[in-house]
Image 1 (cartoon, rainbow, N blue to C red):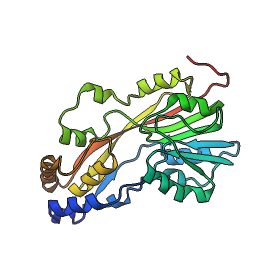
Image 2: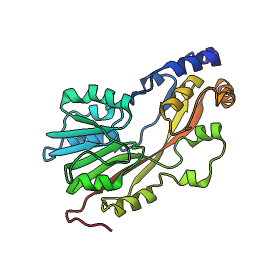
Image 3: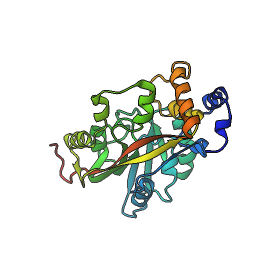
Image 4: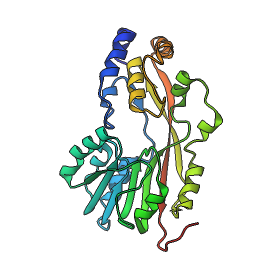
Length: 265
């Protein structure tokens, strides 16, 4: 846990509220929070696919600050990445353009600024929204989609501490079964059933909570310290008493392909 619990609520919150939250580098949380990774190792899988010498072109959707894609050793001859949020887009450009990646701004819901059948592979780690029709359109016949999605009820232990109990419709959101149907409706076929795991998150001080809620803006939409100060102070008391707060992330490994013959189910 470190010595963060020796500092006051105000000190921890003020520090976390001032830290930049662009990109997907979570190193600021070292010693303040941990998250277990799914057993399949998404970045390793993605890097292996990108290194395939038969691959001619690939697209990484909603690349964030480009940190995950930058971890791959090799890219195909044509490699592109998209991002919607301007601070992340700028960071991704700094990391990826020197390595020959085309980095472009594009909305999360599409349309994508690429021609039909442009890519052999489309990848994405934790897309906020999944533009299935656009993914199917830009994949060549026989091309593949490989992604790690955020699954249902991810981080809800922390979210519900602040917001109170959420309805069943929130718990069903991001259901792998629903996403599979959406993929099929767009004309893709699954190459295997989605793999789902829940992994442990531990947070050790209230500053880490504030940082996460500023960065993961969809967890508590409209979050500000002022608006949620009462609940944050209650959580701070739990952290000082127990030394940690435990939640669980939900992850889905999703693989699909565009059939060699065009068509929609």
